Length: 65
Image (cartoon, rainbow, N blue to C red):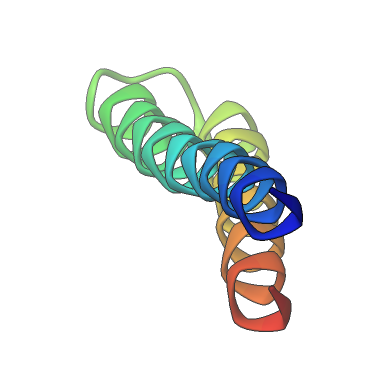
């Protein structure tokens, strides 16, 4: 029973980590799109920085678990 609880908890966190990677890809795409659409380099830099931060955190948490 304890193994089953650990497995369920582990799967839930894996879903969060994969969701974080998807969110990071969305932010990176948003940054590139904002720059290409003429939104300015500052807006694109904020989106890309946020995307990279989320991506790094998701990967680090995935490796640690």
